[in-house]
Length: 129
Image 1: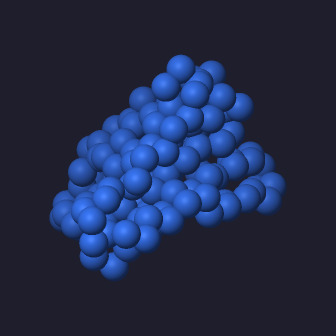
Image 2: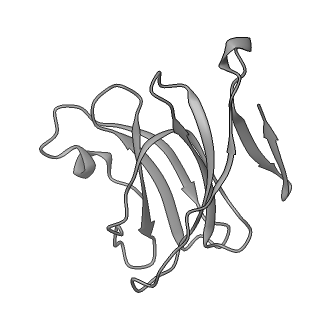
């Protein structure tokens, strides 16, 4: 599925975070930390062709969840203090077609040690903050 040695080639540090196949098994969303600061890059790989698509989403924390349509996934970006901060939806389109990346939710109250999280339980979405 994913060759961590190939991803680490030429890098001083490489740690794979998430590895999440789409529901139909054709795409793979994965995140990689190249600095050791837990700020990951999120990428998509076509599992049928082996191609890793050029789109990169920076400053992502752990957690990526696919929607049931096999082209939408959800992820969280970090704030300046490296706390989970914003939940985003990414609608992936192939063949360089335009895609959307709408912002969904922001955690505003870090004073209470609230942490933004999300998941997909049996296709029922939930968000926790």
